[in-house]
Amino acid sequence: MAVRKKSASRRSAAKKAPSKSKIRSKKAAKRPLAKKSAAKKAPARNKAAVRRQSVRPAPKALSPALVDIDRRIALVQNNLRDLMEQAAATSGSASEEALSDRITGQEAELQRLRRERDALARSEGA
Image (cartoon, rainbow, N blue to C red; front, side):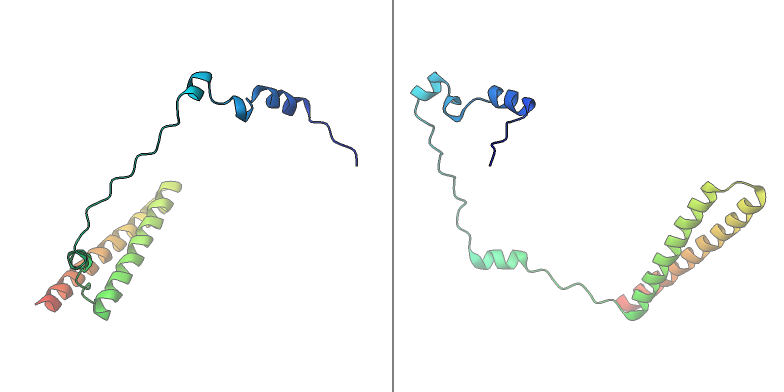
């Protein structure tokens, strides 16, 4: 097999890079390498105290009605976001008016759902 020659750019890069034996300067070679200091250990903790800190009360389970309302609120918010993007992209008085009416309707629906969710959350919490 024939030995391939290095390209000109690789040869110049190889010349520029110092060899591993020349990396340390003469002054650095005379000094001993610095020893790594031992990392300070954190004081030992009481395992029971650590367990007490990490234990959190379980989140209160949401009722299916609240989950359904949250899902519907997310859908209305996504619809509003899409309508806003459409309104920004369109021009013309008829399309702008239609989008404005749809946006107003979605905002009213969102307010209604939020009020319904708040009322349901209060009644379950009491």
